[in-house]
Length: 115
Length: 113
Image: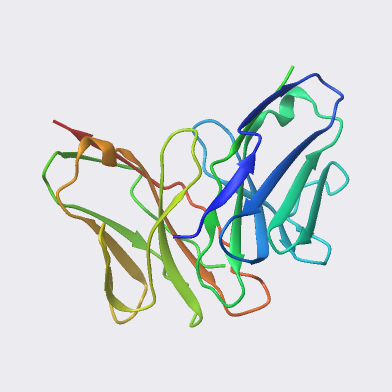
């Protein structure tokens, strides 16, 4: 199956700092990438959808100025958590889908801990 | 978006066949049905996808009745390593919505010796 990577796998930062998470499709071109957040014992919650070369579409309740998404190439999308606070601590997971494909492939996730 | 309903949890023993059924009464014509497996602190892993009838791969089978309002994931001869959360999702890959998927609660499968 298709491979999606994320970097870093885990990050600890101080409150008020910004954190960037990278999502890469390694063996296919991802025209669409998705960002999810998952809290302990809960399901995945879609945060935003990004198409290469265009602005991301955010789900209701997700602040676009706080969670900056860039999908500059067909293999890379980044999520930047700006001015992170402890309540932003979560497991962030990206997924990618190729043009015309029916299947999303997920990255391994990034554990963010904000102190 | 079609909403899905699955059992919250299931228990099984090694070597048994496990069938997890998912209801999706509002599935749309263009929607595919996809199942993912998730272990703790890992991203979901694709298991199988189908549109109608039966699909089989090296790890599972997916049964979809004619009305497509439900689907059943079948895991043959489970092992301890199959203990995980299994998500059933429906989504449209065709429209410009980009196959946005909505995750439900999933089914926590626990396999014991």
